[in-house]
Image (cartoon, rainbow, N blue to C red; front, side):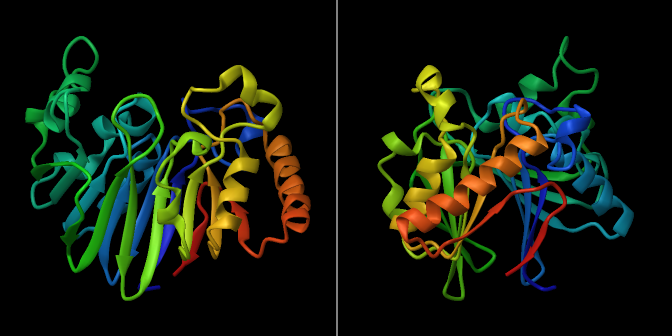
Length: 273
């Protein structure tokens, strides 16, 4: 496949190893997106560790782009274990929110400094480049990337990725009921979006920066999204609970008259684009 995406980590908050959760997957957020042999890595949760091991096994160093949505642990704590960073010949471009929470490089250095980790960023042998983003679009490897703010604590970005008339949106942490950028979802080919809560959980967690699956599905229907992947699953939600969620989604789509193709983001799932 020339163009595809693959889910390497689909959980939010923290990894989970409960046996009843592992059909869906236990690693935190990381999605591989390949467009005409150019590799984009969306977030660096624990899922990036297995991705890095696969890249090393392929043998040939290459250029990678890692786009971080924000700097909460579940989106960066795979980086200290990402093997290509430690190997000469690889080139890694890091992109992430700028602003008053410290520079991108400071954030990466901080989690790899004593007493939190035994090897600091100077141990990396790859060539690394750091780019802090605001809300302006950029062109990277003939692909248009539009970062945009979402409703989540701290400076958090979603990404709209466009090429050859196609659009993919990656929005892992977002309280959609309070978000002001839902119009960007319009006619998206693929929307990967936060769906951490069941409606019964939401009132106790309103304002925490995450969405219910119902709100996400309704927004995707309203925006005429073609394919929706429910993402950033709560680590305490079992495989059976998530199957129950998907059954409810089908009922909701019938009620709303929606045509969106809705799937659960599952670790290891590969989607041809």
